[in-house]
Amino acid sequence: MIRFFSGNNPLNVITLFFLGILIRLPYFISPVIPQSAQTDGIIYELLIKALHPTGVVFPFIYPVIVYLLVYTQAIIFNGLINDQKLFTSPNYLLALYYLVITAIVPEWNVLSPVLIINTVLVWAWPRMVGLYHQANPKTALFNIGFGFGLAAFFYFPSVYLLLLLIVALILFRPFYIAEWLVAVLGILTPFYFLLVYFFVWDHWNLTPKVIPEQVFKLPNVSFGWQFWIELIFIGLPLLAGLLTSLNSSARMLVQTRKSWNFMIFYLIIALFIPFVNSSAGITHWILAVIPISLFHASFGFNLKKKLFPELFLWLSLLWIVTNYIVMNK
Image 1 (cartoon, rainbow, N blue to C red):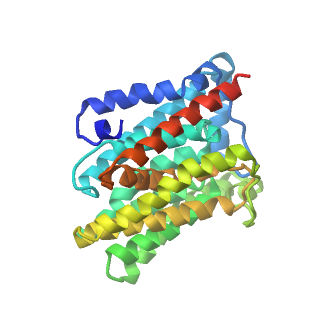
Image 2 (cartoon, rainbow, N blue to C red; image 1 turned 90 degrees about the vertical axis):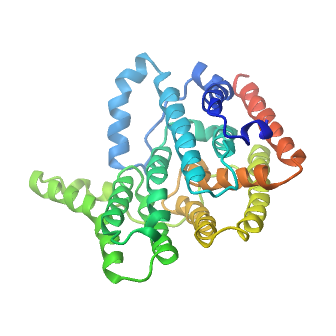
């Protein structure tokens, strides 16, 4: 399967679409209705309320939305990676792994604010790594900051994506204080407009919901045997992909090496954010799936012998089927 998706055949887009549906079929048959959590942002709560009347009659609308988000994120980000030439030749491995990884963990197949935020990150990523060739990047920086600010209205801890933007400025731009201030201004602008709305319509009571108290704590995770199996299927290829990416990128252009390094920082920040105001188990760690899928793709692409990547991929698919059997008991 890895060799098949290692090519640049446009038919892979269609193949991945149906493969993604196949490995998520039980979620379409038995839809999971999302519930608002205390840590969810104000816009996400409004979205859930808006979908509720339709969801009561047609509950399969939720898995359809989830799959459309996951599939479009996978295909678009795969194309961006190919455009940036992070691999020696174009391929569809990242999209394949993105679809598989998000299916490994059942909690990642439910409509969540972080899943929606991944779309913002897919949009922002090429603009961040493309800062190096822009003579005047202030507009791009403001737009990226504005997007991250809006993301905070879905899940407030995503405001810490400002750290990712700071890393991008350090890696891809010489230091100009004006550019840093523009980036911060972009993040603050959505909050400014919202606070103006609260002032005009006297809704100050909603302020704690928009900007909650920040608490660092361990997510409510059940460390059962299922958790450790999922961690093995995601963690071991991730570590192998980190090693193979460091080895392969050493022979690439400076800009490409910086892009790979940027993804390492992206991974660290995305793994850190769910510790803020967390109560949703491992649901919010879907924020890290974008860099994880890239390093899984490196594991599958850069190894000459494909035995271990193929083995892990097929075992992951077997685990997905096993999860379905357990769910339907």
